Length: 411
Ligand SMILES: Cc1ncc(COP(=O)(O)O)c(CN[C@@H](CS)C(=O)O)c1O
Image (cartoon, rainbow, N blue to C red):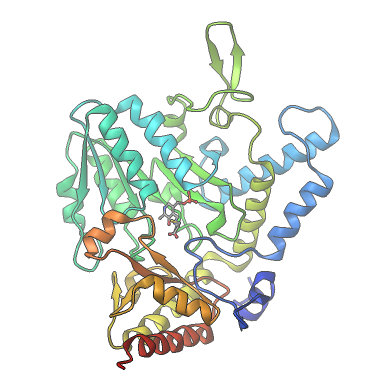
């Protein structure tokens, strides 16, 4: 594998040539959605120009090309997360749909009144609200693992929160606000020791580090293509085959059936049982190109480069008086920094930075319970990926200092 070449990577992303308010775009919002390399864009165009047809149904040549592309993407996704079987890779619209599928299909099947569902207060709404609503539907108990002051989890608290009544434990692999990297492998063992299953939200992990679902020993794992240089509208639910086989589909229609009678029907095999209707063909093929792109760089290289950027940003931002960073130190976090600048509302801050061509996110980041835990109504967040540079972080820091001065001017 060739050494990481930032200039080559940047050249792969056409959108990075954009100017914003007369300045070169500095895109620091990859945690919301990543940008796309020409390799992904061209692959999707190639599909629509030369391979487009519906899958699994047609006996004509284009149908075969489309089916090969779609199922080839599934094998690529299986390899990418090291799932044991291709049937364990279910294509969904994204992380949100994936987790909702588990909550409705597995949750409604096994959770009884008085059972426990264990999550954390750092969760994105996609890994909190589905469990909250499941608990309400089944009259179960939704419990939260206490967090340390720095936004990490102490495994002793995890162990103490999980009991013999716990049926489901669901924890983010990486927090989209704190950047905390949770020890999912250890939490999965604690869950299994008490007879519970382990679900993990990998939306902020899969784009940035090697994820091996067999090593983690998770039962379900979810991620989104648009956060890992892939297109929107595609994600993956990884599910242990033995569990998926017991679960009922939650969407019914074409492709997912075996036999349809007048009063009842039977379902086809995995994975199509969970992929009703015309599937996400072009999106899956785009995800395959995204997987190939990240694998051509190497996920260990991605993590190493992002750690360098994040540590540099953490140190430079920490020097700004009145700027508060939330979450653990640079060695315990992934490539994002959530912060506030005293006296400047995050939305004003993001607007000011945008005038300098710098894109960050402001708000609650779909993590309102975590904002409550932070005792903040909203925050600003800069997130980094393979196409960002230390020079861009210097531009961010300069713009933060300029904005601080502007809002603290006393007439
Ligand atoms: C940890 C985590 N879990 C689930 C999701 C939802 O992913 P979807 O592709 O939208 O289904 C996200 C997406 N977080 C974006 C949009 S709110 C952010 O700016 O942080 C996430 O970060």
